Length: 336
Image (cartoon, rainbow, N blue to C red; front, side, top):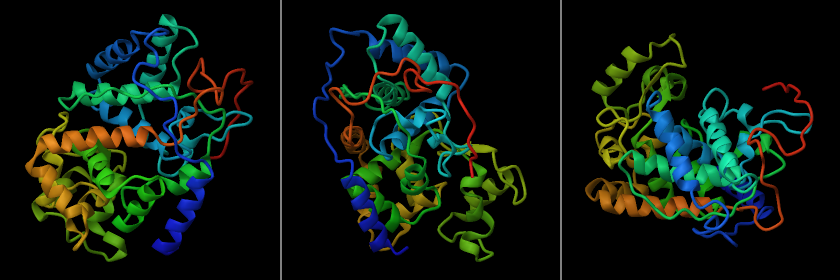
């Protein structure tokens, strides 16, 4: 499919669901669950003791949730008699993680204020807490989302950006959700911490785009390091740091890495290495001014969090993030 046709399909897709931040506000739980932010933060702090990458994983859950039918917690649903989970879609399979921590947060929230806080809002709060705990900015999270009763396996398979996707297609996917090029660069900056598995970038080391050669936009010294971590026929699930210098800290080093041709993922490096792309100037701006990156990141997280929320009487407040309320026995689906 051409990039122009892809954009048309994406625009039609998102128009079916609309975009709104109606009724979302930062004090939504002020009377019904006033300690929810502290509760979420506490669970994440505990998880970080044994899993330093969990913050980045939680942000990714929020991102992958919002990009499919909006920020409605649909990604968290397991297979059931009526649900085909988004977790098994190509961009998520063996990739998204942190569901156990979300479950722990939900349990703590239910113990404090039963039936009040949605799973979709938990992802939004967890993202802010994860960033601030890693040294990044804090912000007032807009809240009031409700949880979907359905999942969209097909949408997750088709509309989520991938690590090996070109800049034109990724820009189109963001534009279809009313997210700008600045949003794209700022949100990509979340790759300043966390890890990636070898299978997401190994073709760049050995056989980029089927050429039999490595990706020329990858620094040769960096490539040599990555080849030691990820042998050509090695275990694709081995992880390495997205940022070599400060892998667990939220800062602007990600953008300096791109300038040195040390962006781990193709989708990262293309932000700087695509000639004539508007993303290049934004990368340079964020690289020179961390405060501008932080400010843009906060706004872009708010923009993303405003994608098609279920509010009012739509959806539900799940008591278990893995299943809709009143769900029966689970059944298996093929992940193919």
